[in-house]
Image (cartoon, rainbow, N blue to C red; front, side, top):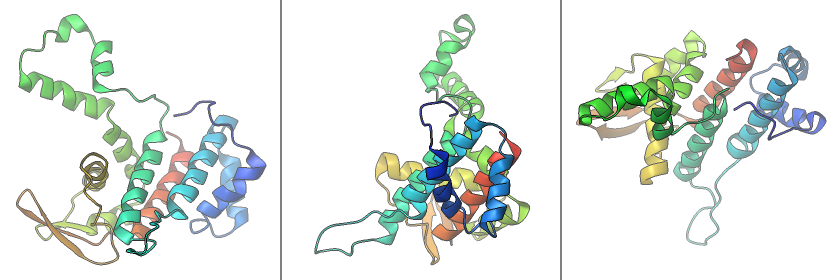
Length: 231
């Protein structure tokens, strides 16, 4: 969210932001042109914050284990944390503060919606909330900014019953669900791997080949698109 809580020292943080996106820009001059094009100091500050957090938390960050019984870095563990970091940064890219479902309900016309008669009505309200204000809406909007070729690459990386995902919206939902399974149920993100991963979900076969590098490339492209074209 755009605010003044994090004021970045431009001279200190811009080199780190450039390093975070070094695989996206051909050289530092191209990065500088992009940075200069960001409209306002507040948005420049937001860009530096997100790019640097991305560098530290995800791109150059790994979860380390300090025990003789284990390797220092286990891929599926560190990738699980990287997915959480990526989606936290994506969700932060909004001009709106986060609102829980109950807060959202309170802002609506209480005379029109209360009392809520049954489960189907609360389900409808919750679906309305997710469409208009839920975290997944921000994530879908982020992935929608990707180029057609990147969208196609991501769709082809996930097959359900041997059929690739139909849209980038489905990809965003699939990835967000992986994040949520880890955050809320401690299910490791095994699907993010350089190898094919086979699993079952709701009696359907799921075949993924989602490398962490592909997701990082998509995030970097989406981050640049967000600040290049605005919200």
